[in-house]
Length: 306
Image (cartoon, rainbow, N blue to C red; front, side, top):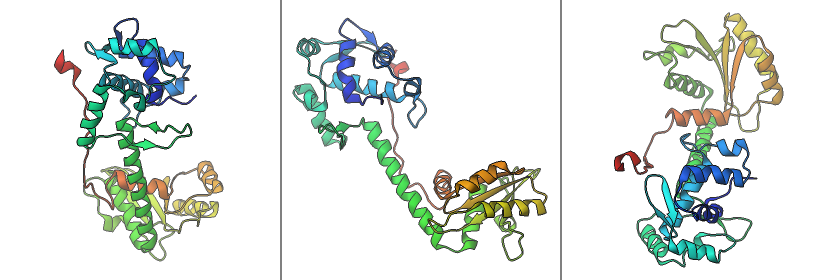
């Protein structure tokens, strides 16, 4: 099964607190077993890498139940069912949803305050007709991914519309931004692409001392014009001419399956970077883009209130 959304988890979380005070971590473990989650589902992490997706959704389910007054927060990471919550379990619905919680005044007040401050939830379509509501942090992550994907597409379009020389310069700039070549790396000396360059567009030190070097081939291709195995073998031959042990082949398009297989079988280490991977690296290292706004996600510091 897929990991349940946080609405689906609200009724199980409420039931888990019916016998007295419970710790949220114990509820996460209990529901993981009850729902027969696989090890992969139990261990799936949020993009932050600091919390599992399932634990995050259980915590949000508990939080929304608290906003409706169905559970009371007792002490750090613990909660207990309220009298209002017991009334719900006396005649439980098939599923507790945001719509169901709107019957409770405390939750309506919370929603009204959330809307006034611009924090209302976003509804995305679903097959059950009700709509699955993402947790607020999932909404932010989804929106962030959409912005990043759009930026990646825009960067690739700019690279494809530029000259081959400009593309070679971008690739070397990216390597320098990633820390290759040392703090005094000089892009003018790293760029070697020209007539008779032997099939190598750039040479950059792998470390500040120049103990090893990376040889670069940069192919500015249109989308759909894939790089085949022949280009990989040609690059391999160029590396041989330079007595190089490793190389980096970067393109704005993609590599064929044959090209990937050829690169993996050759005696020299050749790393392949396609257009999508290139754009992601450019965004991560602020090459060709810049940060215009930073949003911070914060949570309460439990240690402070001990």
